[in-house]
Length: 73
Image (cartoon, rainbow, N blue to C red; front, side, top):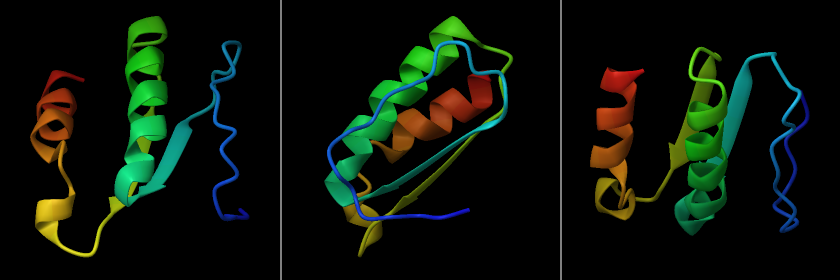
């Protein structure tokens, strides 16, 4: 696996069925969140992992939403 710096080009392959891994840092979570919500709507049984980092816990501004989604799915 190669992880690169963000280039502002994030999208979801609609035909994909392999496990989905989303990686975000700070406010880059907005891209990952959009992809996550779309994937959950289109393929609710797909395995999805998300890794989101921030300097401090308070910087993970939508953490409660992610926790709720993890309980639902």
